[in-house]
Length: 136
Image (cartoon, rainbow, N blue to C red; front, side, top):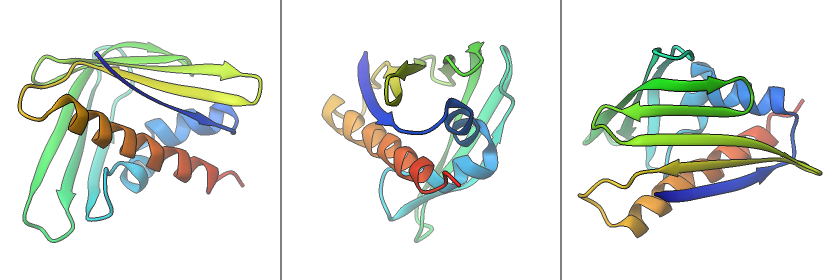
């Protein structure tokens, strides 16, 4: 398993909504400035599915990130299985000064684990910035 994490100083209601609502997912779900997420849908319940289309801004590449939820504990934990069978677990843990968001995921075999770590951490860092810029 690979783990990425960040600490966010914001209320859990805000963190949860910005993590799970499609209109927000499209604003932060990218690993670099030359990519974006033009489409997202999310049925956040056990057995529900999600889909995010991730695409290069120059239009040369895109792919759909699709999965099915296997666990949802409101404002505490989300677990899902990606179409290729890998499992992802996301934990939202309360701290004295905010919340920690930790993602655990099984690596795929095409890219190095370091590259996968960097990409997923960059997306999580974008999420943190997005939350902190949308606190009002």
